[in-house]
Length: 128
Image (cartoon, rainbow, N blue to C red; front, side, top):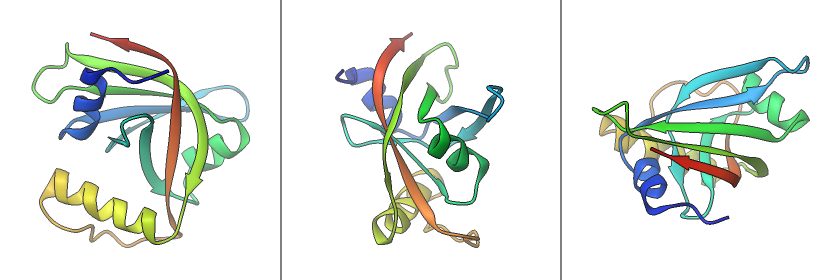
C-alpha cells in the first residue's frame, strides 16, 4: 500500500517515531527512534545486535508511530512487515544522514556491531 503524503512528510522531518516489535513471548517492545522513508517504505536504522533487530529477524511484524514535533496530536501509525535488512556502507551512510537531520552533524556514537536499515513495507496506515 502506498504511504500518504503526510506520513512521508513526517518520516522525512525532524520527528521521532515509536518503533514496536514483538519479543519471543509475544510481549511488545517499543523504542523511541529516528525515522526515515524511501517514499514507499518506512526505514529504521539500528545496530545488528540490538533487541529490536533480533525481534524482527524472528517475527518481521512491526509498528511505527511517527509523532509530529511540536504537535503530538498529529501523527501517523504504520503497521507493516520488515521485508529487507540493509547493511554495509549504505546503512552506515544512512545513520550519518539521520544524524545530520536530527543533530546537524555526522553520527559520532561508537558503533558496537554493525549498522542496519530495517525496511518496513506498510500493510496499514492510520493518519491523524
